[in-house]
Length: 395
Image 1 (cartoon, rainbow, N blue to C red):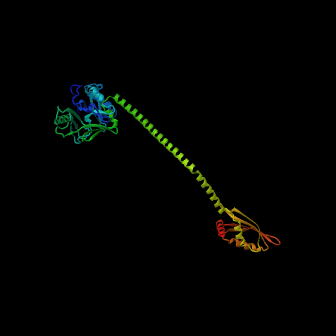
Image 2: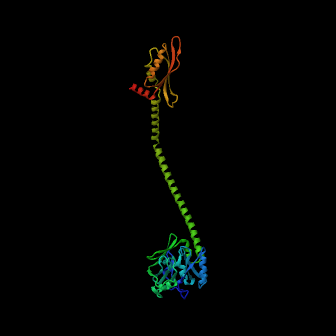
Image 3: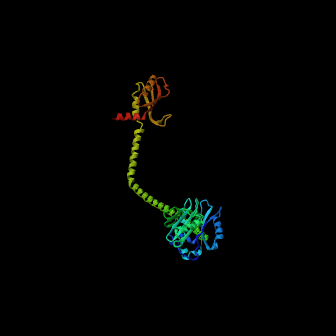
């Protein structure tokens, strides 16, 4: 475990970068690493922040009330890299420039994504500082962090110092990297990157732990974020309601105009429609006359052709009847007749039944008298065949 050297003058701002003064919206404020006291601590169970505070309070030269404290956790939750700085290490101008809605963390966290699996030291050479992270084989967090100005050390010297703090061999591997250190909020998480190297991501749930600002400030920020989220949700709902209302109004206006146009067209075409209705009524009546008219003369003529000379038709009636077990109405001819020869009745029935236009023929029980026999015939015709015969006769 290791600590970075704390400069003699608490108010010193030597080595400050533009990142500590100003950060664009959506980017983290990365503070100079040589202003922080850094330790790798072991923790167990829940209440990690409380454990970090207790351990730092035991080793820190200043009360925690005067310190700005933050930490990041290992994936297994058994270790944390804790860092703290005295409040006077940053001028009021620097503190006021920190973005309210973005994390404020040490810049060396951007190097935590580039580690040596077999152990060793990674040295980053920036424009103003050298930063060394010492890694033990298999660890997810550096065992030691050393930051110094370029004027105070070279790459070899700072690598030896970091290896010593981490109790690594003096001849352990050393890798030197360069490039800008940046941090951006992506999908709510903070992604820190050393240019051209692997990135290091702090999940959204751990951003408040990593941020060095006061808990009261962070709690107030979370409250504002929740309020803004509620306001944004309400605004979205209102916008959606307004959009639906406008769509409904537009649809109503279109339907109203379209309805008016259709009504005008219908009113304009009404005389023609009425004329078509009249023509349709006439056509229907003509069809009914062609299909439903009784044609009594035609029916009588067909039956009369088969009448024996001895048979006399006394009474004739014609009507449309619905036959049993049928839903259709059919033209029916009823004939009351008499004959002096009763044998003529069966001959007449056979002859009428053989007529193609006749569907069926029935006779009631004959009544015998001294000089004649009376009977009644009921002849049911096939309507379509009867109409064909009638039309052929006219032609």
